[in-house]
Every structure is written in C-alpha cells, then in structure tokens.
Amino acid sequence: QVQLVESGGGSVQAGGSLRLSCAASGFAYTIYNIGWFRQAPGKEREGVATINSDGSTSYADSVKGRFTISLDNAKNTLYLQMNSLKPEDTAMYHCASVESGRLPIWLTAIQALGDPDFGYWGQGTQVTVSS
Image 1: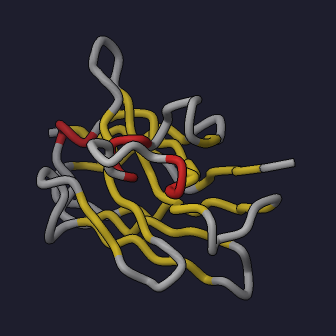
Image 2: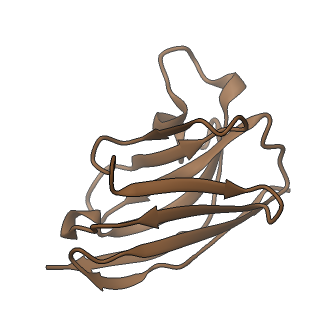
Image 3: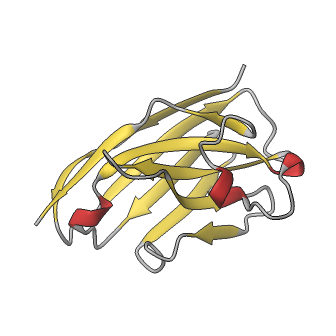
C-alpha cells in the first residue's frame, strides 16, 4: 500500500525558507516519478517539482531557481527545499507519486502529479507566506 506523509509546512515571511519532507513507502522508485504539487483555495492544482529514479528533476517555471527537490533513498524520504518564498507560494503542498510508464505522450510527470488516474498523494502540509 502506497503511503506518503508530508511534514515541515508552516508560516513564514516573504523571503524566508522552509523545507518540506515526505516519508514514502509502498512503491518502487524505478517505476514511479515522485514529486510535489500544490493547491491554493480557488486555484487549480500546480505541479511544483518531480524527481525520478536516475535523479533527474523537473520544476515549474514559477519555482525554478528557488526550490530544490531531493530524494534520500536510504531514508525513503523526499524533500523540497523552498527558498526566497513569495506570498503566491501560499498553498497546501502534497507529496505525490506518478506511474510514469502509464502516462500518455502528451502528459508529463509534473503535470500528472495529483491525478488519480496515474498515482497517489498524501494529505498535504500547509505553507503560508506573508508579505
């Protein structure tokens, strides 16, 4: 059974930093991409970052240069280091897995994060950035 449990959210001022963690279990990283998506009230889900089994990463344009995704295989833990936070980063952040081998050619892993047809996600951790 896939389990994804997030932690590390909180409230910070603009320009601050947070590190999110996700304890992952129940699936093989060789099959899945794993990453983070976020959703703010009244807004669409947005894929933030993914990492796959060979370590390659992908980021949304809105977070490039500010966020860094990493995976500690020994601890089965995914991280998202978020620097230079902006008020528009305020959202619920979810850790998610995507079975990349099932994706249609027109859909990337980062776009599929949070889609129930292709993977799983955790309950989320709230990030609030004040100006």
